[in-house]
Amino acid sequence: MDIFASRAGDRAEAVQIERAHTDAMNDQSFRFRAARRVRRPAAPKRRAPPPKPVLIVLHQEHSTPGRVGRLIAARGHALDIRKPRYGDPLPATMRDHAGAVIFGGPMSANDPDDFVKAEIDWINVCLREEAPYLGICLGAQMLTRTLGGTVYPHAQGRAEIGYYGLVPTEAGATHAAEAGFAWPATVYQWHREGFDCPAGAECLATGADFPVQAIRSGPRAYGVQFHPEVTPAMMCRWSVRGYERTLMPGAQPRHQHLEGWYQHDPAIRAWLDAFLDHWLAAPADAEPASA
Image (cartoon, rainbow, N blue to C red; front, side):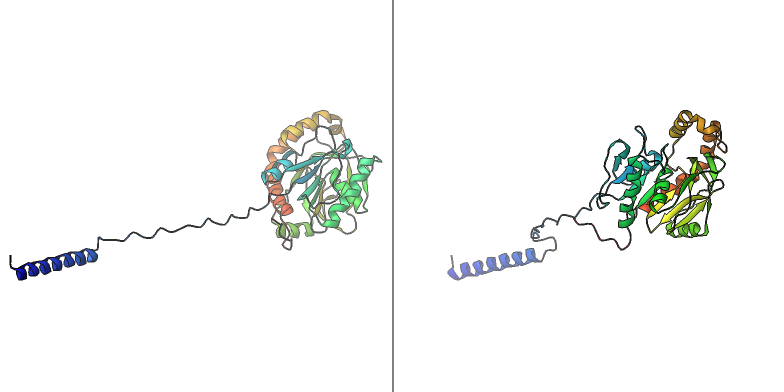
């Protein structure tokens, strides 16, 4: 073979190989594999601390917080149920609680029992720390006593047992509009004692036989004479065990209570739902909880 021809052939073959390589490089279907990205583990999210429990103070062995307790629990709060009448202590500070509710009972805020006096004195913890406080019936009367007000029976021996009208005061209407709730026009009652609006508090709602029905002291302490916590089962139990109360002057007969429930309770439930949202809301200037 001619050596020059051989070299020419080698050059031609080399040119073809180079062209083939260039074509392959220019082919749009040719792709380099993307370098694998190394994903760094995401920083763990800081979980918000669970809501603090709400202190529940009851006065009888088999008492329950009823609908108020259920709606508080539905908002994520545990219920710290205590019964000082049976020896349970009350906390020295409200730092570990989101609020406190003192419920009703057959006793009077004027009774000389040690546990009654202790609860009245203890309410000062909530007032001093501006912790949310809600007194229901007896709990409202205890708040009144704490603030230096008076609790007393009706002058004619009348009682409110059943459903009765509720009228917000000008201060109560203004506060309701600011807080985002609407007062019910009729509420369930079970009491034969009332109270005056004590100095330093404001009256939010009034009634007929017992004029003061709701008060507020400071930004977060409330007392209501009526019973928003009642359920039909509680209503039936109260009106059977306390049947003699339904015979007092001014009281409504037992059969009217359940009728009133169907007529008036939707508005009471709506008020309670919105009120608890307002009552449990942290104030705007509250310090954030530490992780």
